[in-house]
Length: 139
Image (cartoon, rainbow, N blue to C red; front, side, top):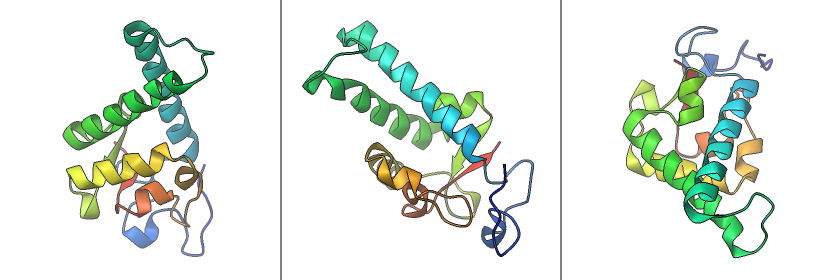
């Protein structure tokens, strides 16, 4: 699903193609990918730290910590989280370069705050991608 823009299509202002490899990934695919990542982190929290799915209190932050570590390490070293890789997407930095550590940490911090992830621009980039100058594209 493409979001309409005055310029034509998401990513056009950034010099990205309309569709195919290197085009901005759709919101729906990004949502599925982050859901896969979150569920995987919940399973790891349950299996390793015995954090229940309905548990309350401070231990409920364990999956968020795992999610943050997963995002930082996998995006910085491989360009995609587990969910993004399964859905054939990747995170890129300026001009298509690899994401550096500062970008990965900044992006993950904002993603974990949640609100920046649900505010996006005309190019379909959320604030957690706009601030560190990254984008999620089709691989």
